[in-house]
Length: 434
Ligand SMILES: *Cc1c(COP(=O)(O)O)cnc(C)c1O
Image (cartoon, rainbow, N blue to C red; front, side):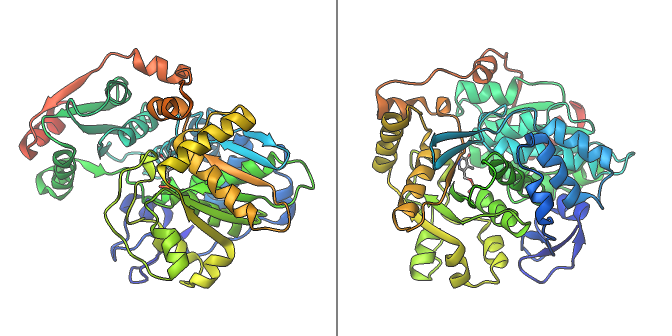
């Protein structure tokens, strides 16, 4: 695979280089230079296949020239040891449950592939890769879990001591082995600053190969297109192309859907559903891009005021907003509407949604209201409702049981090292505590 930068000023690179760089040197984001669609009979052949088989065929299609086949097969099996079922709500609506991974959110898919892609694209005798992550809570857990026991990697997660929830702390600091947790005596901003300083530090550069598990990484983005194909593959033969509704923040999930369509997935269109951080719906409605600080909402993983993957989305439609509008409708919803949606879905279907997925459901309802033909609609359910007990309780007056994965995490002992918020302390830790 050859990759280009969305900013158009950086040289084309191979996959391993795009992966290790993260951001292109011109500040753009990497995208495949071209995507060869799967032949229609190969798409048809995915029907009814298990998730791992669909992912395997797509991984070979994408990276067959970059990585040996056995390595790709192993990667897919290790990254996806869970189901992504399409749960029917009614005869024309399905919920794609992306939350059966270890941290119960869809980011598990991208993070778990990224960990294995980084390990697999490095030459065999490379020095250990040190992944540095600063977290305010959730991302750290997903990244820590994704890299746990991945050979050749060491993960160091920095979180603000006493400012994450007890469960989040156990997800970050309860794994051990190649995952190390630093409880920084300071704020999340201190953690982020320390990570930035470490990347710029010549002393560390001389002794360590540092990398980040940033959300803009192409290695996190591409694997997300696998589950769009898997959703389609679970529809009955002869079903019309589905309409996908995606709860959006940084637009990585939506961009993966656009990539799936370019690889030959039959789709009727996409819905971008946001909370009141409505930069994308506003752009489509007015033609004006107005990035701004994010506002806090109940669907907090979507509280993004400057969506980083917009550059990719626009690049895929040749920078043409009219073309984007032909593939995509967008809308924004308030917290009150989100709570009402959780109530309505519970009442009508007996299914409890988390606040992010509830916004996705609202998007699908609105998009279908304006259509003549009854498209089959798929809502991407991005998190388990058990992760948001306060919101579910506020909507329904009851909570949902804690899933077994969270219960197990809640029992882990915490092994964290307290750290002063200074680069010298981090340097010392990285040097000694291998
Ligand atoms: C990150 C996240 C989103 C937003 O996904 P993007 O790819 O950033 O648009 C939606 N829901 C949940 C639960 C998330 O964690």
